[in-house]
Every structure is written in C-alpha cells, then in structure tokens.
Image (tube, rainbow over all chains, first blue to last red; front, side, top):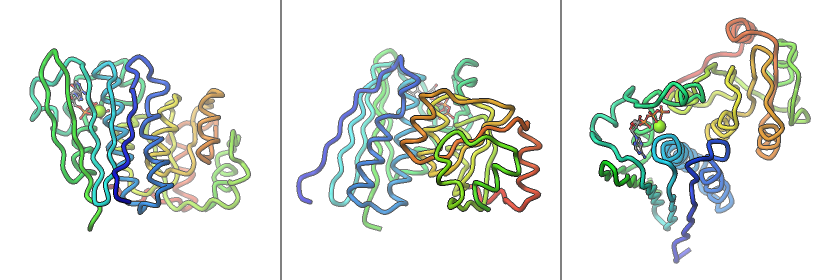
Length: 142
Length: 117
Ligand SMILES: Nc1ncnc2c1ncn2[C@@H]1O[C@H](COP(=O)(O)OP(=O)(O)OP(=O)(O)O)[C@@H](O)[C@H]1O
Ligand SMILES: [Mg+2]
C-alpha cells in the first residue's frame, strides 16, 4: 500500500437515528483491509464518540479518515457553536448536554477524554460561533 | 455461558440472530442505560443489559464488540434496530425482568462483571 486511502463522510446533524454510519463504515473498511482488532477497536470508539459529538453538540459536519501505511488520521470538522474552554471540555464529567440528550443515553462528559485515551495524538481547534475541528491520530507501528 | 443460556435464565425472547445463540460464548456482562458510560468503561464484556431503546444502543454495541444486547423491562427495539443488529450479527434479547434482577440472576449463574478500562 503506497497511496493513502481517503474516506469522507457527511455527518447529518439532524439525524440522531443514522448517526454512527461513518464510524460503522470505517470499522468495516479497516476489517476488510485486515488491521489488528485492537487498532480497529481504538479507531472505532474514538471516531464514534466524535461523530456523536458532531450530531448532539454541533449540527453535523464532515468526517475525513486517511489511512496511511503507518498511521490513521481522522479529522472531524463542524461549523457548530464551538467550544469556549477546551481544557474544561476535556475534563471527565464536564458536559453541556441537555436532559433530552441524556435520555438518548449520551451526555456523561466522557467522550472527549475517551477519544484522547484511545488515540495516540488528539488536537482540538475551536472558535465560538464558528465551529470545531478535532484531529485524531493513531500510530500503527507498535 | 452461551447466549442461549442467558435467554433461558431471563426467560427472554430472542429477537434476532437466534441461530448464533447456542454457539456464542460470553464470560462477562455490563448493565447501563448510558451509552456514554458503556463507551468509556467497557473492556471486553460480551453482553450489555439496558433499558434504553434507540439505534445508538446497537451502534455502541458494535463499536465495543458486544455480542448480545438484552433489553430489560419488556422493552422491544423497532424493526430498524433489529435490521441493524442482524446485519452486524448482534443477538438481541428482550426480557420482562427489571435491570437489577436481570443482572443479579446472570451474576448468580456465573456471568461475571469483568474488567473495566
Ligand atoms: N463538536 C463540538 N462542538 C461543540 N461543543 C462540543 C463539541 N464536542 C464537544 N463539545 C463540548 O464539550 C463537552 C464535553 O464533550 P464530551 O464528548 O466529553 O461529553 P458529552 O458529549 O457531553 O457527553 P458523552 O460524550 O459522555 O456522551 C460537551 O458537553 C460540549 O459542551
Ligand atoms: Mg460526547
């Protein structure tokens, strides 16, 4: 494999029901390529958390997954409300989710810390009122 | 323990992938209505018991490699969720038991809580 494989998904912000289809497709693709189960699991969980966040906090966006020989890079880009205090958002248990979101089973404030845990590198760039870009990198050589 | 045994212990109805129930071995389980917590704490539990019914329950199970989801308090997933689970080979069960006794019965029968991350 020399050329990277690039996958792009539109994540619909109004559609809680089909949320997760991008992560599902990435999981299937990585399985077909033959990545180790541990890598597939780390990528799937982190990407799914990010996809859910884009839907419940940011009105959807675009997910791009680039599979290189030695790493996988996921970029989640939205034009939602942005995150005012990223350090605070990264804390376990911090959530601005509404009761309606909690009734759907999300909003414990665990997603961003979980994405950090399952990825090798994570970067959040955000501007209030403009949107958020979350970049996740997974290294394949260990 | 097999998923078939779980269904018997809980008097549960098997809603899909029943053909896998006899051969699917599980060693630990977790119970939660919060998918956030399942994503954050589950390690290798093969079974999820939940009172929450929406498609993200099935997707969460898929991401966590959970093999069987048990809906408690007689809750039933809709056809869309059943189709999703069928496509992923995830066995769905529905039991009239409430969460606490459902977990208790499985624990007493030897299904452990397992490790968390
Ligand atoms: N893409 C985003 N756009 C705007 N705000 C976000 C975004 N992602 C996260 N946040 C903010 O950061 C907080 C923490 O996010 P995190 O994913 O850790 O928890 P949560 O989504 O609230 O709950 P959980 O992930 O446990 O279901 C959110 O409550 C929200 O305020
Ligand atoms: Mg989240």
